[in-house]
Length: 277
Image (cartoon, helix red, strand yellow):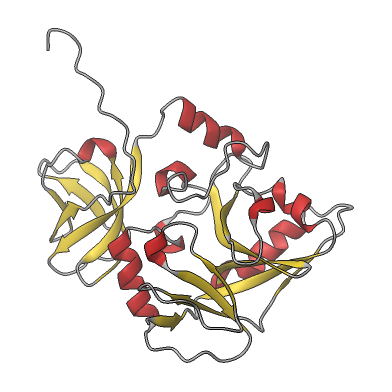
């Protein structure tokens, strides 16, 4: 049973009688669906629809627990607090929780707050615990697994730059198209319904030494086709132009790059060539 503690993850607690309605108008998914044993994956956006943070929302008693990147947890709590106005809610970084992940078909340990990862079944369970849990894997092991699944995480996204459809939030159950308005909804909906997507964050195989994040991805003619994001052991995530997924050779620095698009990704259908071409 691979179980790993993720020290780079933390928890923001949202309590108070207005907690669900308050968060509902701010994030990309339907907060009302969070319940014991069921997590909701959602993002916080700028008013212009650009990614700021994402988290798993777990319900426990009279509170919501937002599992997010530790480096940005305080900023998430602070930014959400700006919208409280008269809402009866309280926010804090809940330092008593340690975040774990369990995968490989095993069940989560008893006594912890746990829910299946709502993105993919193969991603296992998200687990929050205040008591120590014995781990038999490392955060690096988990990182290899999520790269093999092609799951983007915060290291692959650009604050105030990435739009949700570029990062697969639609396929990964991170967006509700029916719940109503939330901050940044207009751009998210317009991108979907007008088919405006021109690039995606996708997994790639790397042949050669792994280049640093941010290394440009170019084609044989030297034209920019994207850039590398996080990676490990011959796999990485990269922001790529959809036009570059036509089989053309790609490189990042001295390494060769081959897109490895997983089955869960839904790419737009190629447009037919105009008549006479």
